[in-house]
Image (cartoon, rainbow, N blue to C red; front, side, top):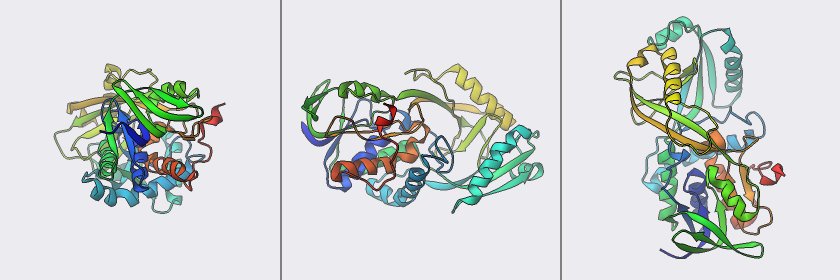
Length: 370
């Protein structure tokens, strides 16, 4: 293992691995520094949904990059699996939203209109009888439904691993360890101080999710990213899977490649607490059984918790760190990290290698918080 690299990337989640992948494509050698392992944080414990049409900042400041990165995911799907040898189960899906009373309808109508207007997407209404014909195990109190097609899903863990493996095959190194500080000379980073040594570098990328604020202290730059806890239950249902992902009644049920039905996810500010909680288990099962009462007999095969990196405005932080010639930021994507990883990784690699990028990252500079 070398003690120097062209670019040191702090963080082995989807953002860090995407930066490494696109740097490797450009012929730049990088080293990913990860203390626990690739995709061991939020990148490995998310539901893997890719929705470019809705969410915080969409429609709005995130719309352009969301559309661009969604297309990138489609283009990457087969190529990245071939390059890495890792199957990560990318596919286009439909989902069904269920209304139990009239209060659910306005949000559903918004979804309907957004999906109807977008190229490659579609939506139509379902009455109660059509819902029950589609999935007889739905709560009979369901009054109306909305079928929407065009989103995609993947395995967040396997996608991140695929980026890392493909980058490794092109010369990237992955070094297990914890970054403890930065070495500097004037306005340049010259190396990373690790708990077990040092790593000289020509540039550094901060992609350490909710831990990015600590790196900000090393740089003297405020990086306002906080942990946003999310928990998911993976259910063994002992029968046929629903025909689609379903949401409603406080639940989101996802069909995933592991053969389990995922119920999630909670959203809490709990600091750096990563322990699965009884509160989340109760909340998620309550919602799941309201939507599909038969799930009261489901076995909880796995209960996971992770910390998403969240900024005050729910938008990512991308670009050069103020005051430094060779420090770059790729963090703070919140609940859209897996969706945004290709675009942000490509953008940061472009900036490192050429000083600019065509990826639409306007408005995501950390200076906006000053």
